[in-house]
Length: 405
Ligand SMILES: Cc1cc2nc3c(=O)[nH]c(=O)nc-3n(C[C@H](O)[C@H](O)[C@H](O)COP(=O)(O)OP(=O)(O)OC[C@H]3O[C@@H](n4cnc5c(N)ncnc54)[C@H](O)[C@@H]3O)c2cc1C
Image (cartoon, rainbow, N blue to C red):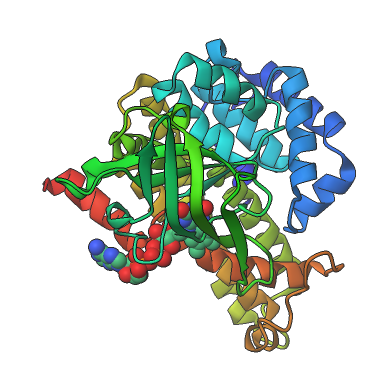
């Protein structure tokens, strides 16, 4: 059973499929336009560079497919629910990279919803063509799950804000051009009410980025220090003190990443191929293989369930009725599922790999065997249940939505 071949909805039912021509067009584009070398990087779960992401985004842009989830008036495709999902599914199956998400999936929709005309005109086109990269400056030491406790301050000085403070775990800060960041503009009243969202060019004097080494040896995350950073008030998103509303709007969309489910399906297929090729661990009994296959089939069933949940969440997002609990449930389920699937891969690799996890990771740029890359992915995926809000925090959001409070 491979998850690619198990869909039973009209999305893939060939005979009466109204999307058959669209799917073929997508597949043809993915096969023709995505360079083989880049597909090899994606297939082997290696790190995709900014240049590679941007190159792919430029091709999508030229084809009019830069933003599958944006409305047409902002340069999006205006696609319906099925088309959006099919795009993600076909590009994942063809080993194209996912699109860089901080602009298209996170701050872009916030700018469309809360931004001024000048901000839309300034920022959206460069997100679409992939020329400007964003990062997210939300978390601080002491303000992760309890984000509203953030302390980085922005004090008005004429028509500027002066920002002082520290952000942490800022993914891609080392290569981003812009950071959307939450700052405290007031300490009066409820702590959420004193938070504002600012758009900050990363080359502004007073910004220092320091890398944080991670267990997988890749450079993802950073500390960002802001010392007397002067920012024009025109870079405020929405109203002063209205940042919490923007932040929640953004997080609901961050947790509902349309690319996640097809990528999980692809990973499960890869793990199944590995299992069939290698069997369970070196010298393991044949019975172990059956146990691993059973675990994999359960995970694949989970992927199919996640797909249904994702489709209904995208539909609600399109109708403006998306509940935070649904995005959180999806994030919770998919991040845990990704760890289960890659955990099976590690069990296939065998105890000798598990015992020397860090030693088996190939450093950046080094040629690596597929097995080593799976071990690498195992380490990287440990962060899946933390980044974007921990599993415990997602459970709290779901419980609050259901029980109130
Ligand atoms: C790889 C990676 C990339 C990241 N990228 C970014 C980024 O780009 N931008 C950004 O702003 N942040 C980013 N983060 C930060 C991430 O959002 C935070 O790590 C996360 O929100 C948890 O916050 P914390 O690390 O401060 O842990 P804490 O909030 O201190 O939590 C510690 C533990 O306590 C638990 N806990 C805390 N509060 C509760 C509660 N109320 N109920 C139950 N349990 C609770 C948590 O679940 C966790 O297990 C990233 C993190 C990682 C690992």
